[in-house]
Length: 108
Image (tube, rainbow, N blue to C red; front, side, top):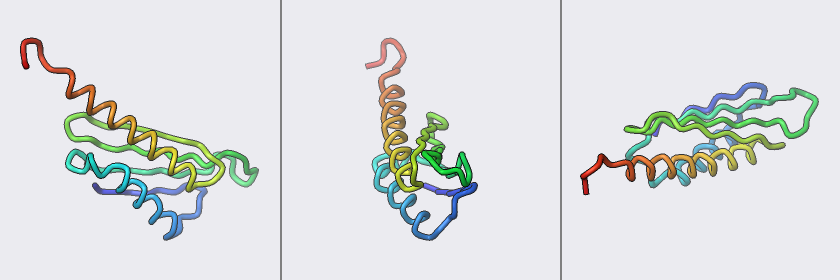
């Protein structure tokens, strides 16, 4: 898995980078053979006004399936990462299961 973290209006710290990498590696370990690039984008939607505005959007390229996207908006960047990773894990599971179950007619 090749991970890229991009931040827009959010301070990119080593701690935030490590948290994102750790969560993605742990959650997506079972899909490791299928994973290509994974891009996480963090952005502050409201700027200095505050509120629930830390958006995390993760795009994962899955070989044989394509891009799977998940996003979450929370008050803190770490919480947004956590929720987006959980949603991505569920979306990839669903896509892999659907591909596995879509066999041509007559194939056992």
